[in-house]
Image 1 (cartoon, helix red, strand yellow):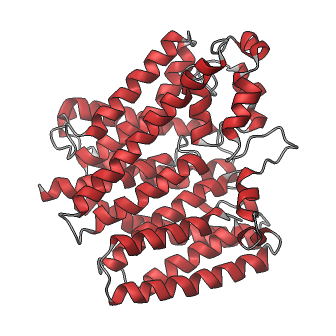
Image 2 (cartoon, one colour; image 1 turned 90 degrees about the horizontal axis):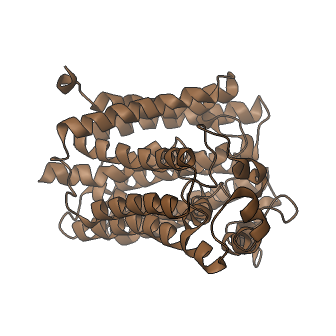
Image 3 (cartoon, one colour; image 1 turned 45 degrees about the vertical axis):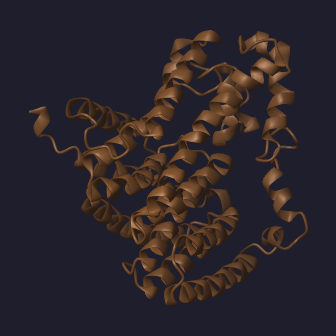
Length: 423
């Protein structure tokens, strides 16, 4: 009976569920535990992978597979040698590796038609998101960090918004170059994304948009569409900047003021007790890794500062856990060390673990670049190149360990699915 299950529909449901669960929990007060549905679905997909095997996986025996395996073994080794509470390590393993399971499931169970169908659904979700953002801003009065559209109205919801908008921008731009998306639809998605980012005060999206435009122009062959796209991008970027200046006149100055971008990226918001993106390594070294009294209090890491930098405090030792209260994570939540992927990994598993995690995506990028030489006009390979770079930026800028990361790893799978069909 199990073998007759069509596991692709669990993937569909997972993505649709994640699209609206943040909005439902924050607007209607449903408990956060409902998000555990994602774990149940992932478990079903894992069972499906074990029953069906990985025979259809396009990167079988490729370096990406080995890096994911090495990273998993390193995390287990790190937890053992630093004597991490097993419940913390298990929960952390679940938090990180459920997305890799989902990634493999997407490649194994989806085909090219499924990708197209899912992105058509996401086009509808994008329009619903736009309407919700406008409603939350103009009617409910939410703004900045609390303006999330389909991602709810809790603080930090605009972080999910950011990666979603980047995902859709990469998709419509690749689709336009591949002659699958019209100029009108391209115009609509870009302008809407810039308007949403202005209302939600997602300043970094403007930097990401410039990056996406430049990488897309490099990735695709020069043509008449290149000129049209570049012209539209410049015009729409100018409109977006002016709209941002109208909504948040002081905030937009970071793009024009000397040192403004640097100040924005290194800023903290609690009087110097919170790490920023550009000072996170120094903050962790100075406030955590070198604080022996703190380490003794919470039984973390080693007394050697250099060892802490290499291996961290131990896999799962600093992360919030639903299996058991983690007092360190609760007591130091206000420092926002868990707000960014790179800082939470550095504190947990050190420089080695952070590099291994980053290498997975670097390897994916080079894999797609290499395949692009032989699939010159493949929309999904080109999309994967651009989006993988966006993901690498968000290892530093955002948090890839929340439920929205199911979207991220689905998108990363699209290039492999396209290659699977080619084979």
